[in-house]
Image 1 (spheres, rainbow, N blue to C red):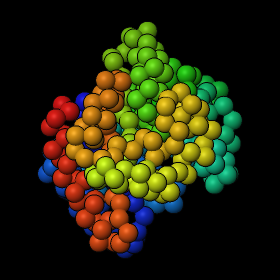
Image 2: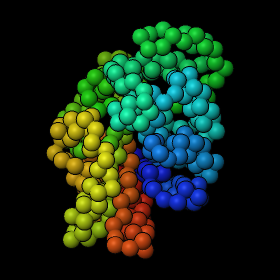
Image 3: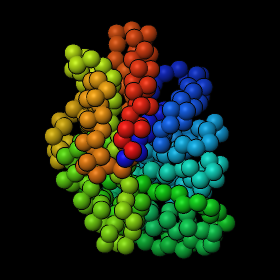
Length: 318
């Protein structure tokens, strides 16, 4: 299993955001992590722009989006942007995309959120054709009528990962993408629901075994502080639980909330949890550093202690 880190989701002073992003990605590469994943927070930096910034300040680490909402731009525009960033990063972009959630697409953007799975399938038909260029992109389906030439192409493969939680989306991801990017999925949900379905769909479509990228919060702490770590996860990350998609995914596992997903405790406890995800079929783990403490200094110290352990565990899980 490959180990990566989520970067860019933290709130804070926007004037210092760029320097913080650069500092965090330089640490991740120096620490030997395999990948870094940039979420698209609705009111924050553009995640593909973050990838371009991080690519300019690194040379090796894979850089992924987790994930770009599909409804926000035409698939030709996304293909053009992604291929450009992929070239700028010397072939290190993993493009994570997804149909997002009703409270973002419909309530925030004012766009339709009807049949998101069907829309994703139609979108991927255009996106995949454009990524496979150069040449004409001629696709007509229920959502798009596209006749668009392109001179862009990826010199090295650019994996496309789809945020897939339910059976239909997992079927689509297995048939039309290189894997899935997950949040709010515990080991049971992955091992009994996600991995079997996406692997079966990929095999039946004649595609390689898909990547399964799982995001989880991680806190290095004393055993007496585990409950505090879970409480903090539930307090600052619980907005995701409002989505019906995530609620259905939680019902397939044993975790009842994001706090239950948190890998918290000493180094041995965190490693044990990581191996449970690997045994469930996860190919890539994306850790969301979750510091704990009562003051800013305590939070910073907690973050750095957790980072040091993550760097060591990257070697142990490979």
